[in-house]
Image (tube, rainbow, N blue to C red):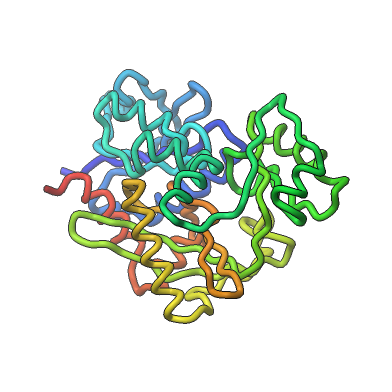
Length: 327
């Protein structure tokens, strides 16, 4: 009997369409000889399974089942590829825990923590991990330009505290641009804004996963954006040079892999994560953020890194899924 896998995509953030592209990538990678695969698109309380003929079936939220040819289907496993709420902040994970449904990501606490960039940075800083200086601003709170400059300096990044794909992110170089950037970030993705010091150096990204059988540190990708920073156009419209493996010393590569492993275990992650860093001129490793549902299109970092490692995405995803069922 084949396992039934549901790829969960969509969500309620500005990354909805990006998530659907990742779902198509995962669908193309999964072993169809081994699994029956459905994409389930979630938008608000409208949950629908996309059937083989392109029609859609309503998902019963009581048990996450749906009807196919008069047969009730309930997946054995859910591969979550929602970028943003509710798939990357713990909400969906809590629901799946309640109905005893295995899933691909980390649990509720880890997802909530990694989704809140400011809180994550403060937590990992307590473990001795280097992060940029930052300020968190909630809706209704005010901060003067003078205080921003004194605490984090210019240039700085102003961005939504919860969100991704660089929506609402501004690299601020001039004092007069601080308040407009705060307003933009507040409008884009919710009620909290993070103001973060700029770190000069080489941006890299590195995937990592752990199963009961082994730990895998993927080759590192160097990110060379054509624009000021790794913005939406760089991520999705090709305005970037992505070099795998990164052009960094072997010693730095080893330290990045060790740090990835430490972060994975400190947080208690599950499935594939991707950690982004800045390597400063003195080869200091500074963490930028952690992606617990990394992009999975054919050109995304994780598939690139898996290919560079001489591995196959089909085998990696099988490994991730079957790890949930192995002793």
